[in-house]
Image (cartoon, rainbow over the protein chains, first blue to last red):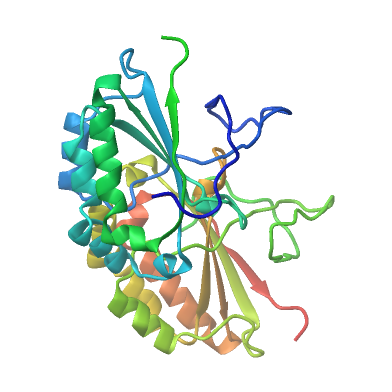
Length: 165
Length: 165
C-alpha cells in the first residue's frame, strides 16, 4: 500500500555518505537524510536491539529496500507521550522490528529537520538475504497495517538487489 | 557559567526567518536552526504551556537573550526514557520554564540535525520586559545548576536590547 506522489522510476540507486553533494547530472531523483539520536526507544529496548542487531554490508544481505515516508502535520503536533503511545503501545513498531533481527538490518535517516521543504520525513534503509525476502514483506505489511500508519501521508518503497555480489 | 568556545563579540544581532541565506559579508558570526516538533513534553505539559504562554514580538518585551548550547555525545547516546528522566524528573526543565510564563517568551531552534558539523545543538531565543530581567536571570541560573547541564559542553549567552522601541 504505497500512497502519495511516487518517485520516478530508476534502474539503479547509489548510496553515499558524508555531506558532500555529488554532481549527478543524470540522476532521476536525489534524497538526503541524516542519522540521529533515538527518538522513542527505552533503555530496555535499546539494549535488546544492540544485543540482537547486525550491521549493514553483510556479504549475504544482497537485498535492500529504501522506504521514504512522510507523516501528517497532525502527527508532528502531538506531544512526545502521545507519539510514543501510538508508535509502540498501539502499533508495536519497535517490537515488530525486533522480531526480524538479526535477519533484517536497518538504518534510519531523518530528513524533516534538514529544511523547510523536504519531500520526506524519514528514509529507512533495510538489508536482508534473499532467503529473508518474505520475512521482510511480513515486517512492512505489519507496520503498514498499524495505527501509526494512519499518520503517514506519503509512503514509497524502492526494492533493490546488490549488483556486486 | 558559560563554557566552551565563546562567540566573537558583536554589537548587533539580526534574526531572519525562512531558508534564504542572506549575504552578510560583514557578519562576525552566523547561526542557523529550525523549529521542530516537541521532543519531551507530555500532553498535560503542552496544554499548560499553550494556556500560559505568549508569543514573540510583544511591544514591551524589549529584552532578548540568545542561548546557543551543545550537548555532549554521551547525552545523544541515551535512549529517550533516560533523556526525559534527566531533563524533567531530575532537572525540572519544563517546570522551570513554565514558572516564568507568560513573562519570558521562548522559541527553540534545533541545529544538530542540519548537518554533520553544526557548532551548536540548540539555539533558544527568549524575550521579556526590562522589569523581568532579574526573573530571567533566575530562570537560566536554575537550568544551569541542574543535572541536565552536566551534559552540556558548550554554553553561550548573548543578551540584547531591541533598538526600535
